[in-house]
Image (cartoon, rainbow, N blue to C red):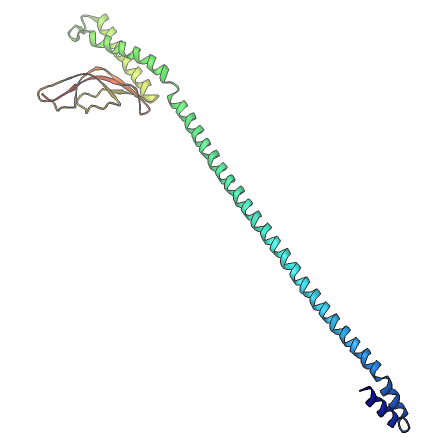
Length: 222
């Protein structure tokens, strides 16, 4: 190739000195052009590699952000659950406290009521012990005393009722172990078994809760 180029230059030198000069310098020009081309390709490759690296780096960052987002969402969910449980526990505590306060208002007087029941029992026995045939105009003192006892008993029962204290006089009712206390069981003709035939002592309930069970005698099968 070098000999051919030299022959061509020798043939063209007399007639075309400029063309001969360009052919003489063409290998260098070709080398320069080739280098420039290679340099351009290398620059393009470097740019494409740089762009690919830039594309990879955001993907890794996005992955890291996604993981952080997942962790934060889990933490938020856990905190929200704890917050809801705390609210539920606080609400339950508030309801229990409110219930205790209401029960204290309702049943705080039960000890006082139990003491008054003894007074009511004495009044009842006092009125029952007075012979009815002796309550006449001829005995004004006894009559006045009896009427005063009856009025006092009526008034104390009104006070009991006002504060939620009610009598339990369950003659003829079914025996209820939550309201009655059986003193004895006996067969009685004409009475249904399991019913109460006799009340030895009146019972009382305070706002639906048995304060003192009634002492009763219960009918049993013959």
